[in-house]
Length: 159
Image (cartoon, rainbow, N blue to C red; front, side, top):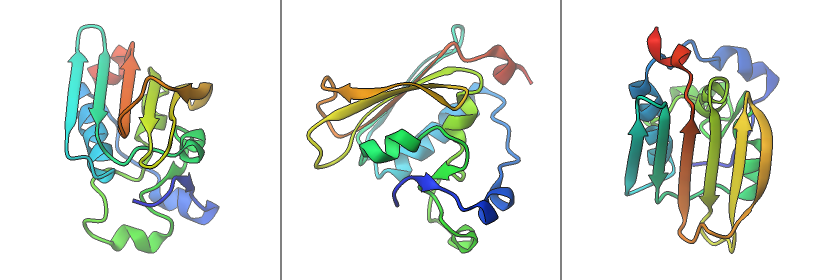
């Protein structure tokens, strides 16, 4: 998987997702796809439908600090760089990298990650595609990523 970066202006409108993550199943599915795109061999899912809590933990390649800075913003992805990448069948499981930005519109999102070969893990908290916190997380010892969503809005789940 490539590095996380903003999409060029010319590509943004073309790849804008028409998908709506309207239920908890789709949210979990997209997060598992992100884990698989990061070459995870193990993915664990924890959820509480009543409280809207979702946690996905993987042993994938993790996210670099530079990638984490951009993660959760609109039109930022590691899944494609050019329109021609859309034609590359099987190049990724997930859909164009907009999942975390979309979920942050209706929930608090916390990402804890450690990239392969890096000495530190990092933590980022976002809400509404805005970074509320970004810093070192020395509790993350293993390579991989944990995504936690708390207070997932019922608006997301009811449609």
